[in-house]
Image (tube, rainbow, N blue to C red; front, side, top):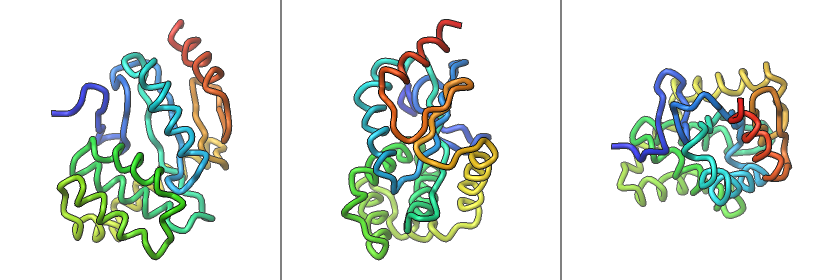
Length: 183
């Protein structure tokens, strides 16, 4: 059974944190090798989810920047973990964000193995999934959707028609969420 605040939506092919039934959707474009995205992840865990987790849905979208060596592979790994055990996808995102600086491209597969072992999942299957065309296509779909919306930097967060790009204050994000909830 899934935790109350996490739902995998197969039709959308992305993780949702918070209230999946909420009419208020926060779209989060992120790159798993991005330090600013890691900072936003911390903001989500420390402030946004505790305050708004029962009220809104945070929908993750993958937007791996070409300048990051293993960001696309990390997004593919998150998609694999999502298929195996939906709650593991968000845990993988947290896990990899805390290890960005300690993960060189040649050590990335070992990070995936480490996470899989820690979660009681098959490490070999997780590493094999990094070459999945199906999972890569899901990541590419998010990326292309982001480009079509004008995303070029991460994190980019959409709350209704307002975009928060790269660095922003939690109070500004909270005010936009409060405004959306008031409608």
